[in-house]
Amino acid sequence: MPSKILIFLGSVRPGRLVERVGIAVKNIVIAQGMEPEIIDPAELPFEVVKVPLFFMKDPEKEAPEWLLETNKKIQDADGFIVVSAEYNCSIPPALSNINNSNSPFDIGTYGGIRATVILRPFLSELGTVTVPTFVSIVNATENIKEDGTCVNERISNNLTKLVKEVGWYATAIGNHKVGVPPPQ
Image 1 (cartoon, helix red, strand yellow):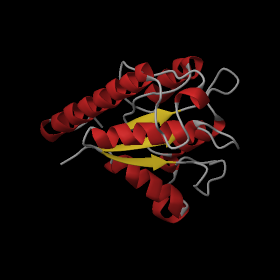
Image 2 (cartoon, rainbow, N blue to C red; image 1 turned 120 degrees about the vertical axis):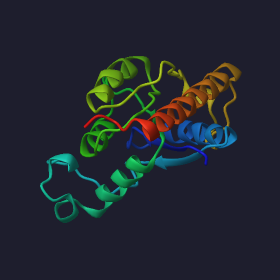
Image 3 (tube, rainbow, N blue to C red; image 1 turned 90 degrees about the horizontal axis):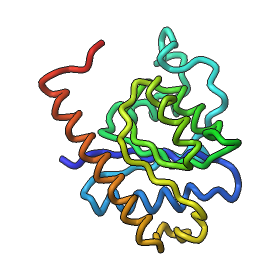
Image 4 (spheres, one colour; image 1 turned 90 degrees about the vertical axis):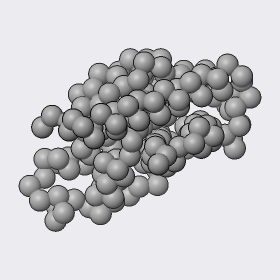
């Protein structure tokens, strides 16, 4: 059964480039025989979540439906890739908000150098396992077309390496969970 990989887009601003990078990553995930799904906060009806799902006494009654659906996708996925812009030397608010709203998950990081430095401990605090590889794309407008076609061979090779690594970790962790359930 192919690994299910969620691809989180980290920006909601007009003119954002995460969409084209997300499509490029999605195409590579498909080429590697895995099942991708893009989670785009610009398409979710979320506001600032004041109480994360895991702090709600009765999430089925308290949480909005979109949050329950997104959380189910997270729980059912085998691996994750974050496509993130860099805002003020940090991660975008939409990415922080959606990840703070859901239960912890395993994830591989992808984004700007300074955002990646912040994403790793941020995601670790959510209980995630980050992969060693990350890809920084300078001038995404020039290196990835709107349809997700990567025109830079180095970036394409690095994205492929990242996707393969996320797939390997997803399979390894999934196989280990069968015999040894995660600690509670």
